[in-house]
Picture 1 (cartoon, one colour):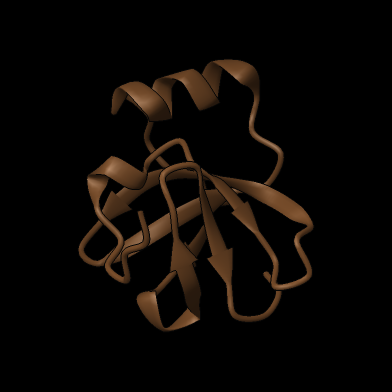
Picture 2: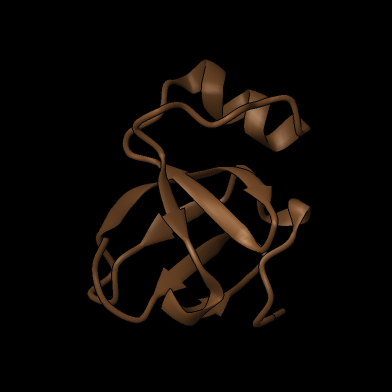
Length: 81
């Protein structure tokens, strides 16, 4: 499955740069932005998948213009984070 709009269902997914390098996970989706935690803990990853996580001060906002593809397992970026 491929989508082009980021939703709450994408929380917990891995985020990959255009070259395939894993850079983090979507911790929270809010107001059209996905917030990426670089190297989140296992606990934060599980919380994100359950919809319980909240972004930290270090989370990077990711808008839909930066996204190349969203699949069932990951979010691929057009460039790098």
